[in-house]
Length: 212
Image (cartoon, rainbow, N blue to C red; front, top):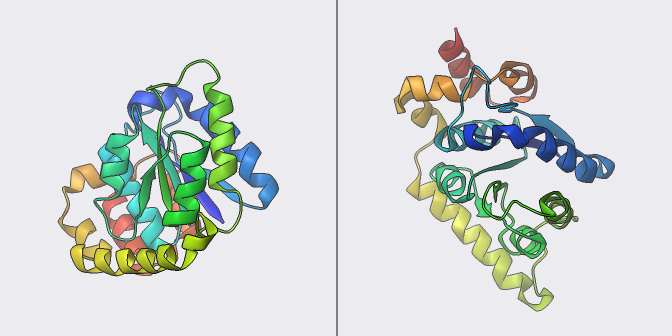
């Protein structure tokens, strides 16, 4: 699985800690982490939590990533921004039980963490344990186990509802504020990671035109 990490500007200084913790958990499981930044508060490309949502949607809808880990100060803004887009099912994840139940009950593809609120003593341990539960195995297996059938049914219903309530990603890219879009895809490593992994030529071509 290709896991993308996206940090917005207010919590960019924690990128190295978050990335190293994520890699320590998922790389032994055979997953690959692509760190899209921000890498520091001084990065030339400044990403807001709204742009985290744009970038997450581009990566997931194009197939450049299978899962996105993101967040902001509380995690709420990033979660709301991500869920504004088609093809993104983002949970607000605070602790290990959140990680496990979101994966098993909701079977989402994006997680938004609070990287400021409550991020004090032992924060790196909570982050590690939460990543362990979020990526503990095959998602969507239900919790508790006797609820697996209705939970899987409800997930499929939600997926179909989102197809109706959201327009397609390419239309969004063409109609959204183009400066906002360009800022979301101007990170230092974006082009290197995205174009090597993107599976949707139409999205790739449009992003190339934005960056040209």
